[in-house]
Amino acid sequence: MLGKLFKHEFKTSAKLLIPLNLIVIGITLIGCLLFRSGLLQTLHVEFLNAVFLFLYIISLFALFILTAVYLTMRFYKTMYSSQGYLTHTLPVSSASILNTKILTSVFWVLLALIITACSIWFLIRSASGVTISPEEFRILQERFFNEMGIEIGSFLATIAGTVTVSCFTSVLMIFASLSVGQLFRQYRIPAAIGTCIVFYFIQQIASMILLLLLGINAMEHASSAAQGDFTKLLLGSVTAEALLFAVAYYILCYYFTKKKLNLE
Image (cartoon, rainbow, N blue to C red; front, side, top):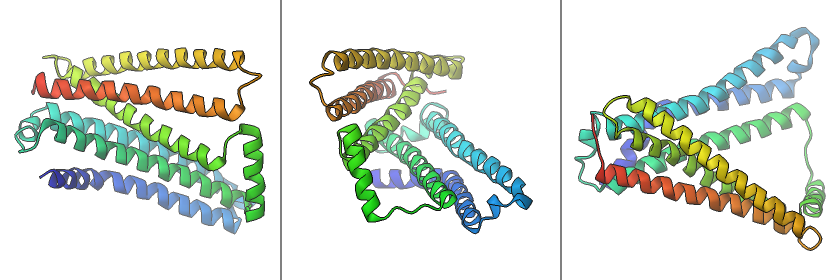
């Protein structure tokens, strides 16, 4: 039953979100072809540059905004609105339902981030026309290590882990806000928005305190601590903080869904 739940959730959300991602991919391919052909660099069709840039930015905004809005609305409608009566009568636990929606949402958010990052990378390469040989890449790795004190592969892997955890935190913060908002008889959406703002400010304050402590630590140990060690400490601390908030938000979601469910 859990597999069917995942399949249904994915297929339903894919009807809107796959076309959004395909639009970004399509515009990226068109942009790469235009850059490689040199059309965007000619004076006679300079307006194409502005048109392409406008369409590209709009497609990225549409991808992230519509993805966020759709996932938020779907979670609320299927969990806390009248549709929730059907959702919560399924022969699976509340945790399974919640986990399915969280994992599906994080998947779509991560997919949008990956496609955007790859899109920007390919467009920059097509526009610059620069290719990096294996020898140049080796030199780049050495320079990166000398400047940052950490291997570029380890750095990228750590960044990927931090981004993944941050996606879970962001999705869970929104879901936790909706879980608190559904407790109110009226003005559920405004209550959820207000809760989300409170959660956001708490996170920002915690991040500022963390960065302040790390900054003081770096100043005190500037002569003995390597740059690479501090980079790892910084990324690890940011990831740990995001993970703690993600766990807290998950507990809130589970508690209110299991113990304080208040359907419309």
